[in-house]
Length: 166
Image (cartoon, rainbow, N blue to C red; front, side, top):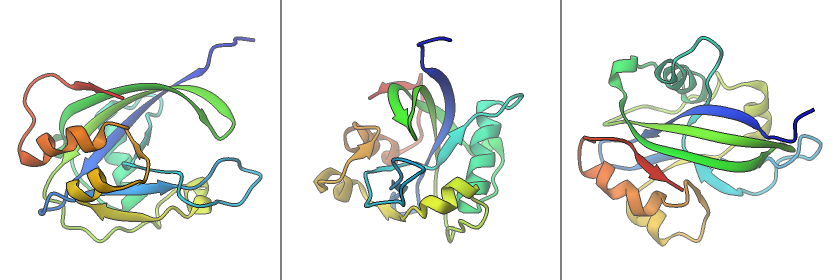
């Protein structure tokens, strides 16, 4: 048995509305044996890349499952950010490797009916945040540098290599 954490590759999407507000979910679940509590941190839609799936395909699938939005892989801008963290996820130590894309000018009513059983159990709140709200908030955000790096994404299309974020 290995002491190394499981590698969990994920696709994450920075979903921006026409006003530049970002859609975030509030994580509430620490342990499957306990009911969800208050929001621990806010994070972007997205999730684990499945076997035989590209990172873009995973991002598109996750958007359909988590918020009921159907897009084409080519609609995603980026990758814009890369993040790696060692974290406890529902009692399991994981080596999270996240690839972030941007989806701009989204006009969509969030529909969570396609979420997984676990996501539905957690009953995560979601809301649209503007840059100033994130920067002025006492809430926790993932990635931690969200407030610092979001403004450049809101200003316009990303060009160049992905940025490493914490």
